Length: 240
Ligand code: LP5
Image (cartoon, rainbow, N blue to C red; front, side, top):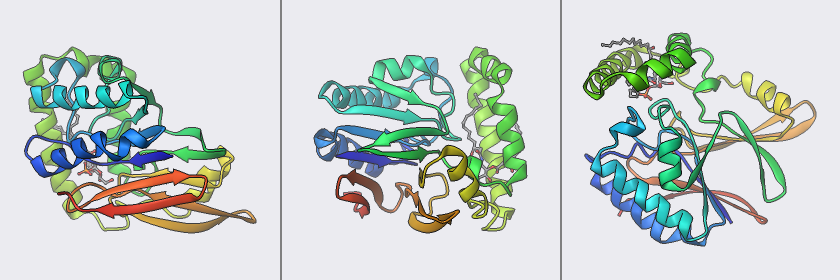
């Protein structure tokens, strides 16, 4: 059995989400062959060298899961794209590129964080191109931690102000783009997060039936996609 989650936005200020995640790692995730985390695992990540004691604790908890035999895969989100190899080594997880096609129990499936599917959000995509440029990444990683903290706060506050003004369809996936992406990848299932709009959408790619599974964020409740030979089940649960 394989579990997929996304958009936990882990942060010290949300002990309820943290508790639920640690409980998930010690319980349900132990019975899984693999756990996939599709981005925005942390609320913000400014570099592996700036890990807080809280983040180090989460890292150790992931390590305990991978040491127990569950393989852990992590994809960057727009909040934690600075997670690097040092974190992954310490946590015992494998960094997946976005997009990735993986074999889930015999079916090839496309995994994405989801931000690249929001093609109408042009301002964000411009910002993304700048932030993800190798030169920017190198520069950001070499800035003093206090500068990075300040920069992250600045981008966050600008983003909050911009997002409030954006129409709901702009910050969602562009539906017409999805068949194209599936067709290019040669698969009929796409799984992503980012939009915080959990659902299973049915669509067509040419003549073939296809589906887009959107993972939910962990805020008022938690969300997990359980995948096995019987199929895919998207479930919500209480953050107790
Ligand atoms: O995150 P979310 O879901 O609220 O909004 C996203 C898009 N915004 C972002 C930005 C993040 O929220 C900021 C994360 C900061 C921490 C991470 C790393 C820090 C690296 C730098 C430090 C080392 O991703 C938002 C989308 C939305 O998803 C829906 O898809 O719309 O995008 C925006 O709102 C972007 C605006 O449209 C354009 C903003 C221009 C910002 C200019 C930066 C100025 C910097 C000032 C610095 C002092």
